[in-house]
Length: 258
Image (cartoon, rainbow, N blue to C red; front, side, top):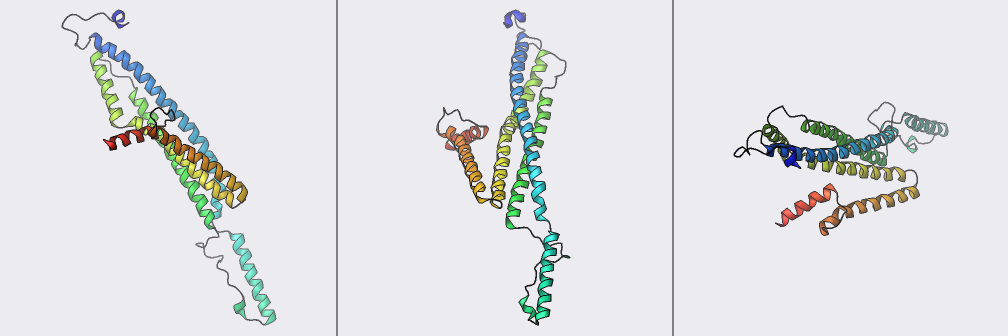
C-alpha cells in the first residue's frame, strides 16, 4: 500500500521532483524490470548452454569429416602404383601404351582433390551450421552485456530524475529492438540444428542407406512439426504453440492486412 509506504504530498507539490508519484513509479518499474530482465537472462542462458554443447558435437564431427576435403596422398600413391604396374605389363607384352588409362591424380599437384561430392555437401552443411551456432552464441553474449547495462544502477538524484533515466533506458531498449533480437536467437539455433540434420543425413547415406532413411524420416517429421507449430498461431489466435517467430509473423501479417 503506497499510501502507507510514502507520505502524501503537500497540495500543489504532486509533481515535484521528490513527489510520491515518482517513488511509486520507480517501485512499479523496478518490479517490472526485474521480471523482464529475469526472463531475458533465462532465455539467453539456455541459448548459451545449448550453443556450447551443440558446437562441441558439430566440431567433433567436422574435425573427422574435414580431412576428406584434403588430398588423399595414400590414394594418389596407390593409383600411381597401379598405373606403373600397368605400364610394366604393357612393356612385357609389347602391347600398345594407349591401353593404359592415365591417372587423373598426381603427387605433385596440391590442387587435385580426392573428395567426393557428398564430402562437399557434408562439410558445407556442417560448417554452415557451426557458423550459425557460434554467431548465435556471440550475439547472446552481447545481449547479456546489454542487459547488464540496462539494469546498472542509476545516478543518485531525485526520484523524478531516476524515473526519467529509467524511462530513457527502457525506451532505448524498445527502440533498438533488443527483445526482438532475443526472441529471434532461438530461430538461429533452430536453423543451425536443421542444417546439421541435413548434413547428418548426407553423411549417413555414404555409410548405410537404411540408417540414413530412418534419420531422414525423423528429421522430416521434426521439420514439419516445427513449421506447423509456427503456422498454427497465425490461423488460430487461441493456439498455445507460440514461438517468438510466430508472434512476429502474426504482427507482420496483420500489419500487412491493414
